[in-house]
Image (cartoon, rainbow, N blue to C red; front, side, top):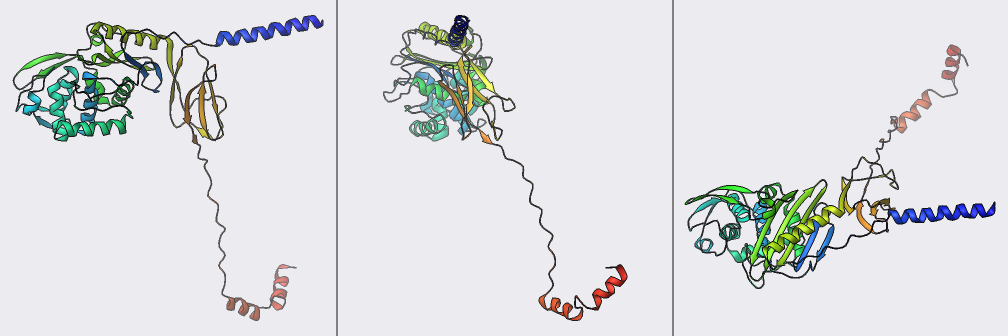
Length: 381
């Protein structure tokens, strides 16, 4: 009988251990890419799913225009009329063929900047908003540091044409794109595939330069920007959404355009195939959360698909989401529930007679005298 008990205990212990091993989800192999630097960021949670030299200082080329566009949208009036200067007209590289003296709204210039990568539009925007390209660069860098939390970005112009000190990182570009995509107007322009351009001297139809949005569509792509100067190689920013996942992929310094797109698709596949973003809603109930705390709003966290997660809260109301290895995935400060309290009922104040009045009453109507006797005769003792 004792042998049987031992066998049963060993069986269940082995089963329990094997079950835990089966439940554990192993990290997927990191993809191999050709670009010198890259990053995959989940926009809702800020979770970095992949990175390669993501904090290495690089030349961004026209990915700079993502920053210029969101700055113009938030700091300018898109209905303003902008007059094109000689400097803007003479700007080299890709353009929307503005000429000196042309007029366009700020919104039209932002559209030309993102959709047709207009360097001339970038200079016109900079001069309109800050008076000069140099001042615009200072204003833009301060704005990006405050709003997007960049740490290694120093832009010297609004378009990305080569300047030796015009640098950023894949990580910072992902942060800039993440911040920009919180703005609905930016998203509408960033996601344009085609636009009828009504210029003062020419009309045309502009098409996005991003292949995954038009020529070689990738499921879920919502926006993107291309870039190239010889010093930067091919740079590419791409955003894509599926279910609750919003991915931002930045690839920098690819040797060829084809390689930059291959890397981007590889990284998007990697993110969507292996990860998911889950949402905890305030009305949901989950273990280890005290009744005197509540979620301030929805909480999103990104984790490996099929991975079991655990939620728990400490004494100060910090909610932690951890994976099967106990690694922290996400933390959030919960709010204390404000308990409804009933205001104390004030005791009815009894009007107090002046001291002289009390003594006068006692003098005229002594308590143990005839008033008491009359009361007893009338009402009984």
